[in-house]
Amino acid sequence: MTRTALFGPQFAADPHTHYARLRDRGPLAPVQLAPGVDAWLVTDYHVALEILRDTETWTRDARRWQATQPADSPLLPLFGWRPTALFSDGETHARYRQVITDSVGILEPHLLQRDTTAVAEQLIAEFAGTGKADLLAQYAYRLPLLILTSWYGIPDPDIDRISAAMNRAFESSTGAAAAYADLVAVITALVAERREAPRHDLISAFLNHPAKLADEEVVRHITLTLMAGHEPTANLTANALLRMLSDDRYAGSLHSGAMTAHDAVNEVLWNDPPLSNFSPHYPRRDIVFHGTALTPEQPVLVSYASANAQAALPPSEAESLGGSYAHLAWGAGPHRCPARQPAVLMAVTAIEYLISRLTDLRLAVPPDTVTWRQGPIHRALTALPVEFTAL
Image (cartoon, rainbow, N blue to C red; front, side, top):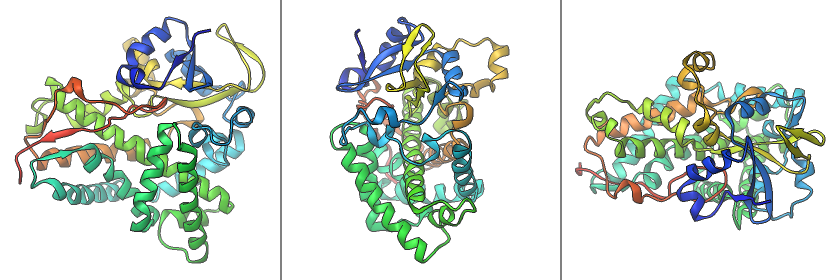
């Protein structure tokens, strides 16, 4: 059986051609997530919804698969089981998810918009006088990082260490396991501090929740929500900026054009979702699913990017699924992302504020020369170089 590698420079450069070929093989396609790590990829929109919603056939518990992996497997930071909502089912999942939604719910939209604008102004001031910038490294990546670490009460000396660890973990390559372990070490120390001296921050909110999570559960949920809140939001922002700067339909957007930052974000969620392949599921027993024999020891991932591209929904069906929001970038079913609205608000606010301050932003390189990071799950730029009139 030939398996398609979801890693390496060829896949990163043109994943959509690979997805099209995979769809030709049926709704499930054999893939590799890393050298020697096999999986199945759901490429069909309706089959993706089926697996995301069916909790009787499928589990998110990865422990049977994890037992087949070495301790330093580059996939474990993102796929390895831990006591969090991401890897739980049923009542346990509901309990964990409630802690997340209640804690994140403290951050009201007007506060998020205020903080996003303040951090955006701070970051723009650092490069506005130069007439050039890498909007990924200097803006899109830093902005959610600074906001999230502020909400969690993470001290400045730990921010770059946390950033480097999360970045490496998402690459799912050599060193990912060590990077994730370093992230856990930082958060473990902070949780211990907050247990002794609570503050008005999200770490304390997790600790003080009525669900009474153990410290280990709090640590793992902090690492989960930091990683889920930072990297995908940064890449959503950068990918939407690239679309606005390279697509003629947005040519007027920098001067109050017809298509907006919200349009660009929504198009990215359909076409280049920052999490392209994720939601690992495992059959609870040996099954045949849409003609494919599956066992509990091998992960079945959902390709949001492929499913979205495959979905040719008639208007009536699209409307019933949420209209333009019928994409699967946030998942579906009980594990649908609980922070999708804050992520979109942060990305749109960051983009709108940037283009209001730097009104003649333009790409510094041809659009077809931008490059993408390698890795099986994300769609992420390596850089976004721009030019503008210095302020």
